[in-house]
Length: 181
Image 1 (cartoon, rainbow, N blue to C red):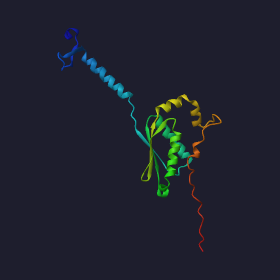
Image 2 (image 1 turned 90 degrees about the vertical axis):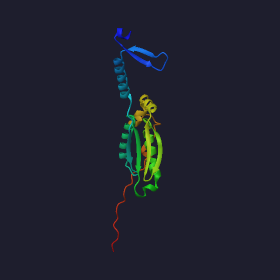
Image 3 (image 1 turned 60 degrees about the vertical axis):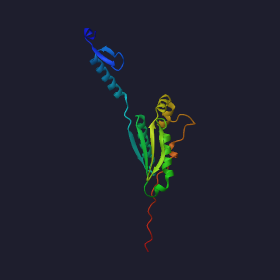
Image 4 (image 1 turned 120 degrees about the vertical axis):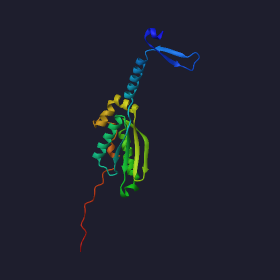
């Protein structure tokens, strides 16, 4: 029957009694299967982990720039590892690093969520952020939140600026010459 139709006889279940076979064009079947596999590979996303490093004494401009870049990574679907690097005696003040990490998490809340909370590893404090699809969809539907992020006033009860949560950069004191007499 398969020869009459110029098709292939393919064994589906050889262990059954009697064996189950199917009449089909096997070459076409293999081609379509390869196309489905190719399509599924194309649709799958490659999630990579990006890293952004901060310091406890970071300036407001640098903080805003790095945090904006973190938000872009999250919007693209990447996970982001935030590292606060402590030098010298800064390691004795982990609350400064925790405050910075909290303000980063608050600022990127429209596109991401905290996956791993702040943890001190030696001289580094790390936190991992993951993209949040539900929050991204809600942000797309909420133009008021976009206006707040852009810095335009929306209402009298608008959220306070995140700048208050970030410690001010430490400015070195002016050197005073010692009395050499």
